[in-house]
Length: 210
Length: 210
DNA sequence: ACCGTACACTGCACAATGCAGTAAAGTCAA
DNA sequence: TTGACTTTACTGCATTGTGCAGTGTACGGT
Image (cartoon, rainbow over all chains, first blue to last red; front, side):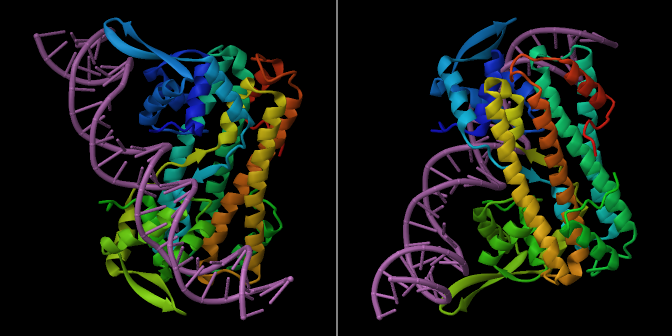
């Protein structure tokens, strides 16, 4: 029952490879640091370490912290060997879910205002994460990295996030300008502007300045 | 049993709003056109229209196509009203799963070659999708859009994809250059290069030229 | 002494995936 | 024309993952 190693299992195992964690810490840490690469629910992050113990990849003991109990998980040698197996396996293709884009694609069902609101909501969600990463980088400069010897990896990772967020924000701006030219969301089809845009894309050229 | 409208339900309903589809067509169409905004399994795409029928948002009938049977689904007026409900609801935040980034973050467990292979695999996956979108745009120029009056929406959507793919490809190139400077994947910490990079990111500046 | 928040989980219903299985029609080559 | 392979057209089932409600303890402030 539920003993297959998934990417989420390896993600938790990789965290355990850094140091022992309690179940609760694992949920917090995974949601903070892995959210942008591998977003998983708190519920799952409580279940994964248990599975790792069952597989022999982690050991656990119950600890009293001031009267309250908590489970501490530690990686085993077998767990470290399991991580090597992961390293050798083929990386899964990215999977990107953006409801806002779905709404853009079907924007002709609603009004231009609805579409505009969708873009606002997307911008809100992105800028929140964007700001969080910028703040995190500032904290690294103040020596705030929890594993200082791993800073080079975290920063390379953060570079990806920042580039993504900036690209999305540029597109939102572009989309707003584009939509401002539309008399409505419906039945426009291949306008001269859209045709010019399509031609750029077909030649793999970016329509965004910058 | 299973009668809540999810975003996936609305995605299928929005397709039905364009024209009636058979179950099979729906799975093909959704995987082709929605893959980049809302990637869903074939299995789910067979189940969703059934749910829509149960909810009264779609009607269905069995059609013989040359001896073979197939289910045809059509949106109802109630279904169109349900789409309005979706339009009014808050857009969900994007969700981005990139296993390759997880591997970057934990690259100190493996070798520089492992990391380099991960980047290659990511590049392969991205360039495949990238090329598919570019080809699609070329086909639009030849009048190949299945709903010509909706071209303006598809192209705005495609602009997002192209920008994302280009941003990811730029980052991969940047990451390769960065990693080439590393004597190993482990224990580097805050090198002068990484510090300069962190400083840029903390000021929300892009470290990538272009 | 009370209240809100952080800690520290578990159970359960349901959403979604992957894979195997079923079967008929079309396509191409030996 | 027969056999092999692909495409069309799904369904069942086991398992993975999510969301939410529920349980209880400890701590800091008023």
